[in-house]
Length: 192
Image 1 (spheres, one colour):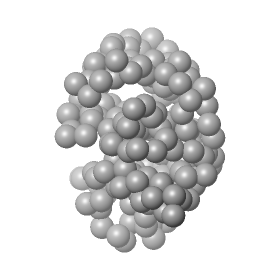
Image 2: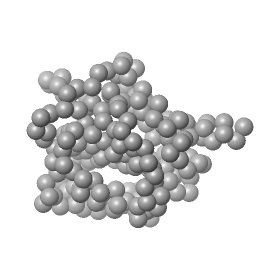
Image 3: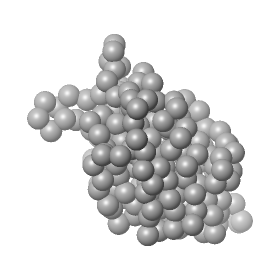
């Protein structure tokens, strides 16, 4: 009974966090993975300047200066060409675990995103506390002009505190070298 209540709470939280994905047609779940680029664009330059982003929702993190920002009802999106950072907030009573993410979160993500391949789910210790990191690849949205898609690599971090769940997603073309920049952003996240 307790497990059912926990799962119901997590599903409701994940559904809220994925509200922007819910509008996608169900056919994308069956989409095939596109080939990765041989020389992928999308490396964030080592010289990239990062600035502090402070959200009205009670958190801060460093984001690349000059990237286009779109405010959303549940967070914000920062995009530059094929790279992106998406932050979404949802309410939940239960802190996610690796097991609950595998059981509840990943199946929803696989249905709602394009050609998802999960590479790993693990707990990590960051300055903001213990979080869950999901590593996966997916297809990009089709280009509005050419319909071309790019294979993306993604890292999604799930931060939890006091009934709030923040999902921080970092994405770039598969094979791009953004390890240091993604580390900087994920470690810069702080609750206020």
